[in-house]
Every structure is written in C-alpha cells, then in structure tokens.
Amino acid sequence: MTEIHLTGRAASPGLAIGPVTVLTVAVESRRTTGDPAQETAALKVAIEGAAAELAELIEAEQGEAADILEFQVAMLEDDALAEGAFDAISAGTPADHAWRSVLNAEIAGYRSAEDEYFRARVADLVDIRDRVLVCLNGADKSAAIIGGSIVAGDDISPSTFLAANWRRGGAIVLAAGSSSSHVAMLARARGTPMVVGLGPLCWDDRPPALALVDGDAGTVIFDPEPETQRLFEHRMRAVNAALAIADAGRTKPAFTAGGRRIAVLLNIAAPQDLAGLDPAICDGVGLVRTEFLFGASQGLPDEETQYAVYRRILDWAEGRPVTIRTLDAGGDKPIPGLTIDGESNPFLGLRGIRLSLSRPEVFRMQLRALARAAVHGMLKVMLPMVAIPSELDSARELLDDEIAALRAKGIACARPPLGIMVEVPAAALCAEDFDAGFYSIGSNDLTQYTMAAARDIGAIADLNDTGNPAVLALIARTVEAARARGVEVSLCGDAAADTRLTKALLAAGLTTLSVSPVAVARLKATIATVSP
Amino acid sequence: MHDVNASRASKTFMPLTASAVLVNPVGLHARPSVKLTQCAKSFAAKIEIALAPDGPWTDAKSPVKVMRVKAPQGAMLYFRVAGPDGDAALAAVLALVHDGFGEG
Image (cartoon, rainbow over the protein chains, first blue to last red):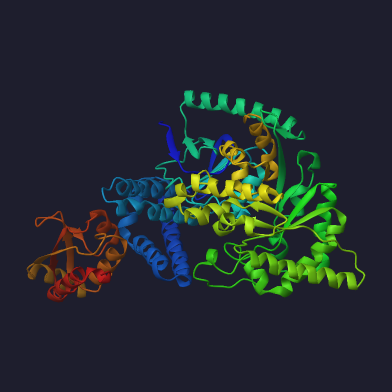
C-alpha cells in the first residue's frame, strides 16, 4: 500500500484524520444467492435497470450532458462490456464481485491511456460501474456519513452535509467543489476542514481506508504510511493544544505581540449563529448578512419580521456595536422575484445597492426596520457593492425620508451611521470621496474584482489571492482614507480568518477584523504572534 | 432462414477494405464511437476497424470494443467490411470519418 498525496484548494481550515467515507459509492453489501443462474439474471436486471435510469436522465438533459449519458447507455447496452462478468458468474463468482472486477479492469485500461481524453473517460466508467452496483445491491442511504469520517466525493450537497454529525471531527475532500460553495461556508462556520479541487478521486479496487486532511494547506494524504501518520498526529496534537489555549483566551481582548489592541468582530448569516455564544468573545458584530431573511419560499419579509430579528441581534450584543448589511442580492445570491434572471454577467450586474436602489419599496422597508431597531443598541448600517458616492447619497436620502415618516407617526426610531462596504476597486481607490460613516472592506469581492479571477474556477484560483500586492494596496488606501476622515474601518471578508494573511492585513493598518465565530480563537491567537 | 443466408453471404462476399484519417479534434472518443457503432449496426454486413492495415480487427458495432482501440486524432483508421450491403456500409462509415463525425 502506497500513500497517495493529493493537492487541491483549501476551503475550510483545520487538520483532520479519520476513516474515509466515499460519497459516490454508497452501495450496500449484498447477500449472494450462490446460484449462477440467479446471479446472471440479477446482473442482467441491474444492467437493464441502470440503462433505463440513464434513459430517464437523458430526457431531462440536453446537449453535452445528454451526449455523455448516451455514451454511457451505449456502453451498458453493449454485451461486450459485461461478458467477462457473466463468464465469472458461471464459474461461481457473485454478481457484484464479478461486475466490479470486470469494470475495474476496463477502467484500468482507460486510466493507462496516453491520450488525456481517453483517461478522462474513467469517470464515465466509474459512474457506469457504480450505477449498476446500486441497482444490484441497493443504495445505502441511511449509513451515509459516520461521524468523524473523511467524506470523499466529487461534490457534496448542503443537505448531505447537514444530515451528518460533524461534532466528532471529520473533514470533506472533494474532486471538484468550490471554496465559495454553500457547503464550504457551512464547513467554515462549523470548523470542519475542507479541501476542494483535488481532481478525479479514482480507486481501482477499494477506496482508501484512512485519510489525513490539511485544510490549511489544501492537501490530503490517503492511506498514509505509519510514519506519515505519526508525524501528522503529532502536528495535530500541537495544533489542538494551541487551539485549546486559544479557546481559553478567546473571551479576552486581542493584542499583538507589541501590545496593539485589535478589535475582533463576528460575521453572522442569521441570529441562530449566535446561539450559545458568549458575547464576551468579540468586540461586536462586524457583518450581519440579511439575505437569510429574504431566502426560501416565504416571500419578502415584512417590516415587523425584520425589526424583530435585528433587535434580537442587538440584544445579544449587549451594547457592543452591530453592523447590519442591507440586502446584498444578485451576483451569486439570486432571490426569486427580486433579482434579475439571466443576466449575462451577474457579478457585474444589478446586485447589492444597485438592486436596492432600483427596488426602493423593498429597500425602504428594510431601512425602516433598521431605524426602529437602532433604538435598542449600537447599530450601524452598511451598504454593499457601492461604486460611486451618489449611491451612498441616494441611500441616505431614503433613510432620512423613512426616519422622518416614522417620527411623524410617533414611532420610536434612531439614525444609525450609514457606511459602505468597500468591495469594488473604484470605491477603494476613491474611498475618501464617500461621505461614509465607516468603511468595511469586503475582501472576497474586492479580490475577485481586482484580480479579475473568480474563486470557484479551479484553473485561475491561484490568481484569486487577497495577499496580492494590488489587493493589499487597495486595502491600505481604504485604511488611509478612513484615518484621514476620522471614521472606522474594518475588514469582514474571508481574508480576515485566513491566518496566513493576518500579518499583512495588520501591516496595511487595519485594527479591526471580522470573522465567523468559529475563527475567533484562532485569529486572536495569531494576532498575539504578530509584532509590533 | 435469414441466418443461413447471412452466413452464406459472408462466405460469398469478398471483404472490402478502405482507410481514412481521423480528423475530428479528439479522435475516436465517446461521441464518435457511439455514432460509428450506431451507423455500423444499421447494416447487415460485418464491419471491423483497426489502426493498422493488417489488424488486429475490432467489431465496429461494439462501442465498448471501439473505445478500447483508443484511436487518437490524426490516426489512420482501417475498415474491413464483408456482407451483402458491404458497399453501402463502407461508404457510410467512411463518410462519417471524413465528416469528422459532424464535430467540425
């Protein structure tokens, strides 16, 4: 057994070790009949069943996807594919074993092909193999993921992720996947290490038993040699010990080695994210995404619903500042009935503040709810995707209108400071021109727009680097503008939680970072190592 | 009855041979293989392919076997056809190859 090293992209930090659960082959073990005639019949039925399933899938597909499936059907319908399996069955081999070993031999032939294109057909053959096995043995739906295991697959759906128990450890390693997928966000929030973009995960006979996952470096080692495993466990113990110390210190304020005080705020997507958290771990809430209110099928939330949610978060914060971002829909966050379908380039389209200003009735209601909630704590309101000062000015006029209307009706309200999220390079370059109450740097979009590289496209993922001097220069420029204008500036993107960047971010002049709750202890511990 | 005729036919008809260069971008891959086998299956004649003029010969009606040939772009593909509709069959498969399997 040789250990297999694979390198992908880090999607959620942390180290993990555990048994491997392969998502794609959730095949139950099967009791063989022992009778060659019955086994032959069973395999025939399974192959026909698999072909019928594929035919059904083709109905729903078009173009390339349909062609790929038609190829699989043609292969399945060809007696030449299974003839070796039927020979083995008549010699007494159980149907599933016979099929698996014949297909594995076929797969090995493709894997050794000189031509890249034929090598890539391995995935089709694996698909064919497993589809027939599932028809033969039945799919094991309940066993899915055992707590503490390393889940390997092409991709994983949010529902599969949510159905598993991650408290006992474990990790996710994916052939494809994206660090900006919903599962990656969930994994980061729960502290589950995750690596994506590993390339095809192909195992000839059986999947690996054990895996070591480094969610910081984006590497995975399958079936490690004892020495490799020993070193990894040693490293994990050291990291865990450091984390335990960090955890113990996470309710203390963060200082650099040189004694500089750094404010650590929380990013949350919904009030539930705060459940069970001690507000003492943070200096406030740096980003409340409000898209969760607008998702799902319940339609747009009314003013009372929004007010109640905003107030709950302010109550939790016990007087600490809370920055709530107005609806940031569009781009990768479509909302039925609100965002525009079929934009040719949604990331450069009607999203964030642009959408809010084009749908003022929805925006006004949110501003009303926010002004009412502002009475109950230290609320700040942040506008996403601002590119030019007039967008901020228009939003301010709407806020002023709504506050005047509330006061006229005698409804309690207050005027929260209105700030901008700096994520469009234009806003960073001219930050001083904005009459903003504060700045919050959205490093994810700022990086993507500056580098012209999306995070979820594997071939250019390296370019999507917040540590690039161009991105750091825009961050430093925003910090300078904030200083010159005497307002606060923070950074609330994923870069804040990437401890490899902490030193560079603090060097750029930032003194406030906002991260998901699970990243607080780690960030504080890292800040303590930065000098001065 | 039909079978008897077919076997007699394959004895009677001299095999026809021809060759053509694979011009489509990625060789005889999944989609072209499916097209070739579908075309071949529409004829009664025995149709075989090879990467050399003297074989080894592969049944052109089996996508599994055609894919095993792994014929890359630019390869010379040899055909051997025998049967009552051999002429039409050979013309049809050659047309497919010349046409790049409709992939341009």
